[in-house]
Image 1: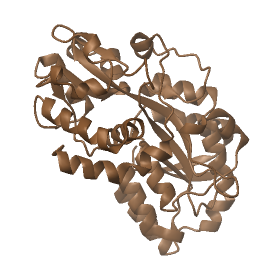
Image 2: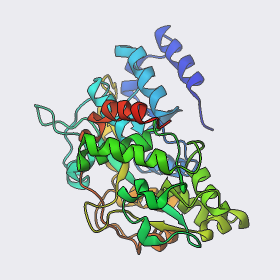
Image 3: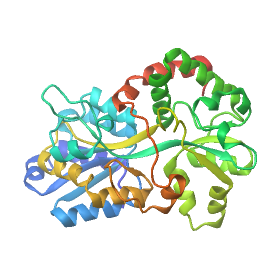
Length: 352
């Protein structure tokens, strides 16, 4: 059963009151996990790790922002050992705020591409590692929109697509990460012009989540929309006829395949700064880049593995791309550093 942040608060209070011994935590085969991954399919991932290692996982679920705020509030008293977050900007923020303990792991360094992990610290440790990715793609109305009119991100702002665009809030982390990457590609001035063009092309004000954008295209409310791939994959794999019909109604484009590649956001993990179970925490992160865990990310939650050469059995992901696509190589750290600048742009152009 998922435990909420309320349970975390109770656990923290208990630690503060001396009801839980941090020494006992260190002696036990255990890790305390703060996770923003709220996917039911991850239950098997955690249980398989415990079966393989004997290390028990005490888990608390929240969202990225809640976890970072909680770690700040707890300080050195935090019982957290491992942090799992689902957005590049939040990982960068946690690193900058000193929430993570840089670690050295040959296993992780070999498995995770350089652009999908933190830059090494002065002593050679790495603050966080990407564990899976989600491509930020364009879906379009196959009856009303030509694929070639939406095969780059730049075309989202082209006047030919005026009145067609649906998108969630510009301030949502998924969009902030995309816009941060575009700032690296285009430069700040051109990116702000691009954002203004998207505002001009909107079919309606931003609202809802990524699945809502896909459904809006399928219903004819919009001609094009932006979504992370795993939302579309869920609809494609659904046993609900209405959801399958939505997926069949839309086409999907992985933008910029002829230039810098499609933007990918990352879900990643780190060892908590004040972990009392550091050895077990590193073991858990190393397990998450194993073939078994990477296969689970792909087939259980429709995410793309970070480890190269993984065989992809997910039928929806394979149907989208044939199992492969060109992704951009912008470092996640650069995307994170652009967040404040991007938010200022959004305010200036009226992108809600």
